[in-house]
Length: 274
Ligand SMILES: NC(=O)c1ccc[n+]([C@@H]2O[C@H](COP(=O)([O-])OP(=O)(O)OC[C@H]3O[C@@H](n4cnc5c(N)ncnc54)[C@H](OP(=O)(O)O)[C@@H]3O)[C@@H](O)[C@H]2O)c1
Image 1 (cartoon, rainbow, N blue to C red):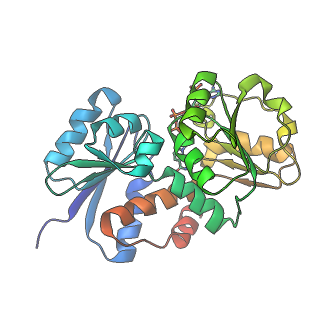
Image 2 (image 1 turned 45 degrees about the vertical axis):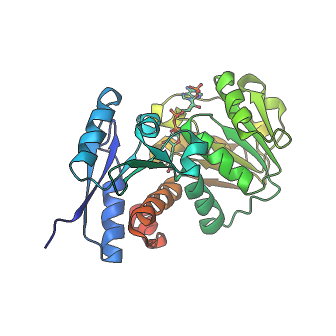
């Protein structure tokens, strides 16, 4: 019997990653034999570590902070989703040994919002906080869903401007200076795509961004999502959601990309929540 195919997740730090558990659960569910490990890859060693993994027969890898940009640069080919995001969270060895970069963040968020939480994004007024890798992937996906207006705000305004330029549909996208956000009025959906919660930093936000209809969604999950979601609840938001469902959907997307079958995710989410 041949050895099971090898997969990995790269990041730094990586011990906290749920990816090995998720892929093991998906593989069991679908009856696929595979090996999936977490590999610590500090950015200065990422290229060497990733190349060795693929040279030694690795089939695919998820990539998390802070290596997503490097993963994009390492790849020989890029899917449209990776191209648009400018960063990659999935690498796949192709026939002949070349590496393809893909990005599942945008699709994962939309699937979680639309299919799990029943949020219809059409015609919504959306505030996107952050302009890093995740924000970039998510912004394109939101426009695909026909939101009415997308306001991007980032601590470093130059980065928000760059993202708005990349989106290239100026009539629906505008940027707000970080300090002027309080003048933007209330939003139907506020997405926190900053790493503030993960870093344990603070992000003062005006309560005027929230109405009784607002949905607040933090791409982070668990403890890291709590400060933003608590702020939204205290400001009167209708619903507050964290990014655990998105994480599971992005993992399922990469599983499907590699194995050609999509795992069921609802039971997996319930398992992680208990
Ligand atoms: N659930 C999921 O599946 C999923 C997937 C991807 C990402 N995420 C989460 O999304 C978040 C962002 O990830 P990323 O990959 O986009 O990270 P990233 O590329 O490093 O971007 C970080 C963003 O956070 C902003 N930021 C950092 N510290 C800040 C502070 N003190 N005040 C205000 N803004 C600050 C940065 O602003 P500057 O430009 O000014 O530095 C930038 O916009 C993380 O929490 C990550 O865990 C979740």
